[in-house]
Length: 332
Image 1: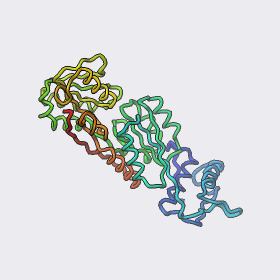
Image 2: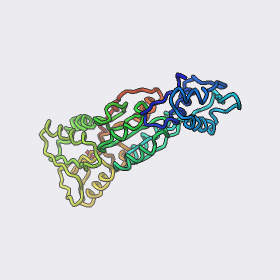
Image 3: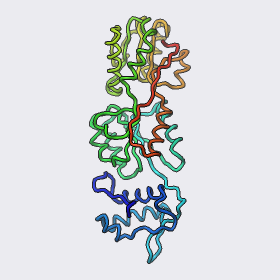
Image 4: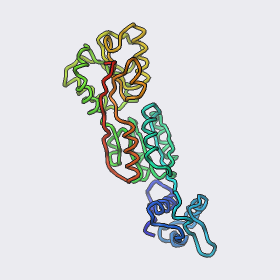
């Protein structure tokens, strides 16, 4: 019974831990067709479980066709070739074009026997908490994009620690978990330094930073660039009511604001890349085309999705900083 793992404080109901133990043993080849499972009494006595708990796990496995019962003899594995479908809980902050690229790459590189259920917390702490607590015990792995929400550690800690992966942003509360992430502070600073010769043809740089939704590292990276270059700057949280002035270059972090900025620019009769400069965050196919091309600072979301899938498949418990690049186009 060495392949059965039941913990008292794992954050997963004990019957689900029994089910996952059988699934993992099948995936790893420890159990094969015709193998007998330990008896109900053996499992109950070994792990201090009620017989009802053990039967609940066995009944789920029977319903899914993974095992069968033989009267008077016990429970046996139905087939060593059975494809055990793993379920992955994927929690995003919101859906947009680049998250769709990440998701598609993630699913494509997981393999066909894996089901991914995607959820969105929309930067709402209560929704974040509810979605995670409702998922307890239902998934083989949990991929969490905490965004900039506070107090995430106390919620994520209720999940089994060896089944959690953090995506895109990390913070001190979640520092013990494996992750693939962006280094926003470094990425912003390095990209702006690379673009410095083009930025300095403008007289002022404006960062549009709605703090509730954006990583604080972006602000720090911008401030580091300002200190390094002593460039004239302004930080705003909205474009509402703003009149654009020739000679400004905008760093825009979300696509809705980008569209609004381009519309405002056109309404004022200004020329993109000449009167007004724009640097957008996160590249999409559309940004290659709009207005002759929008300059972007972006991580590779397809690479992020692929590498995340590899981490889960290979059970890697490491932290990986995803690569980032500056793409110069007409808007600068």
